Image 1 (cartoon, helix red, strand yellow):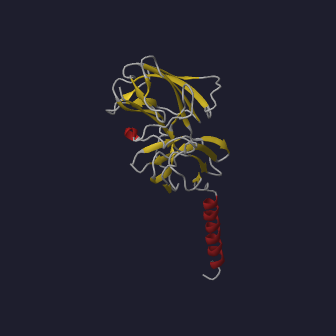
Image 2 (cartoon, one colour; image 1 turned 90 degrees about the vertical axis):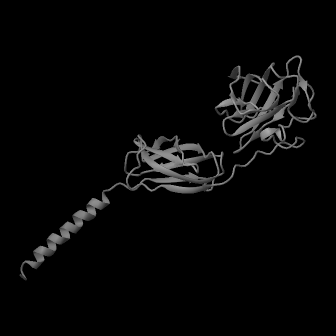
Image 3 (cartoon, helix red, strand yellow; image 1 turned 45 degrees about the vertical axis):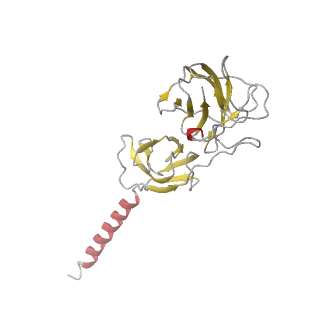
Length: 264
């Protein structure tokens, strides 16, 4: 028995080395990173999926919202073991990011990332403008009270975005106030509005006073060039027909809105 002990010890040692080698050969667990780490809703953030030592072409990132809805996080392969993308959390609250397969199945061993998203930050209007527009036109979007001719209207935007509107009031209609987007005689008439925004977002639509979604009668059409000094990045024009009096909200995705009060 004493002579067999070294042989048994050697076999145990070899088995231990084999197990250690097997463990060491496993690829690292995929990890997720959000920058900034404490984001505000509607602001663009950078999301990275790191998985050194393993292919990432078949990996995806999905986000679970506070309302328990799954959203796809767009990412692309930017290096060996690295995917990266931009994302906007649509609401404040508790979110969870998960690493999944292309089909949406969780990856075994990949840890989800839980984070708390802060309320969205409102873009502040320039000096001289009134308060940003709000639901129900309480208040309507502010306009430049010093402008001659067609005034600029400042939209309500979040996440570092900036939104402006430049309405061309049709014949038979008129501005109802010098400090806000209020119109008289506009019901049933087509109005052209040029929108200047930091970046364009969809869906682009109007919400009538009763809540129905209304598409523009034409547009939004991209403008190649412009001399509009309020235009912060990209410019598009669209035509709308407001079929009833009340507060109309023109939505630019989830990050911006212009609130127009049509009195008649």
